[in-house]
Length: 195
Image (cartoon, rainbow, N blue to C red; front, side, top):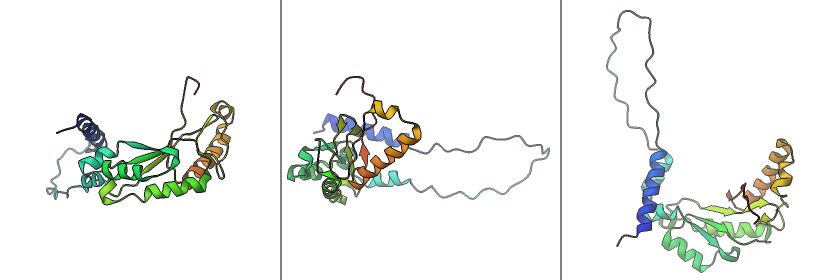
């Protein structure tokens, strides 16, 4: 029995992968000022290009692993429990996110992130590491708090800074997330309604 969502997800993967293909072609012909044609030996056929890394990885994945890469599992209470591990293994989930506000600090979040990355295997994710996400926009929306995480002001305050100041502070905030094992941030955003 085919599940409609799996067929749709597979179609999405095929479209994305085909869009990533190389569009490199031969350079356009150019005019020459030579009046006589030259004779050149026929070119030796070049070997087939080696598939790009994403193509090689995708080729090693099962259909279920490919589909699992499209889904993100929320970590309830910022924990990786038996239920989450079971879902990662059975459904080949490719990424997780910290759903709740956490005061565990960089060290506490890093422990959970490391436990998530420990689930990477040939059987679960075809050895592809997880995206681990958080919602660290600033202002009212700052899910990661505690020791090692700066307080991030609202976008209104950030917008009043010079680009160089904002960039330097954003580098610090990004380094804090990276130290916690978070490699995907749901920021910046452009919300038009209050949270």
